[in-house]
Amino acid sequence: MDEFLSEKEQIQYIRDWWRDNRMYIFIFGFVVIGSVAGTNTWKASVLNEQIAASSLYESLAVEISENNLESGELIAEEIYSEYSESIYADQARLAMAYFYMSQSRDEDAADELRGLIESSENNEMILIANMRLAKILLYQSKYQEVLDLLEGNLGHAFETKYSELIGDAYLGLEDYENAEFAYMNALKDTGSPQVIDAALLQMKINDLPQQNTVNTETQDESLGAES
Image (tube, rainbow, N blue to C red):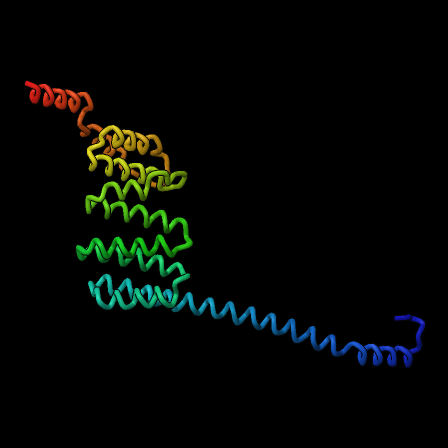
């Protein structure tokens, strides 16, 4: 505004400017207010969902601690359906897998872990679920399924534990050479954040049948058959 305008001219200038621009100002104000209100509403909604999911998960933990399977299943299903994208859905599946194993329902436990692996976007949760599922598959003597699940899955904090489980699977398949190789891989990386029992691993290696002994026995059986 021209500083040399008279006071009366300045007042008239302001009035004219306001008349010409007030609609734009009102629109801008409504947009800003609406944006702020919308953001706050969204944040409040997300927070409320997290609180509700957390409350349900706490209820699930109580039911599990009190060994109430039916009530626990109902709460878990509610978490899966209503809060599937929250971390509590993943946590609930891990909890229910543990609960089912305590009830000797290993296939139900495996299904919970498969559900987590398929639905979760949290890579660490998927790694944990893979590891726990592998343990169940070993319990079920499904050794090849363990290898299909874990082999080639490298470069993460659970790699040493994966190697041990792979060794256990090869041991179950009586492939002692690959079992030893997997166990040795696990021992090589004992500095990993995933803690393993190095002494137990060494015992597993020491208890493996010696390849020479196995080969000798096989040759003796062949000679006996020929004679």
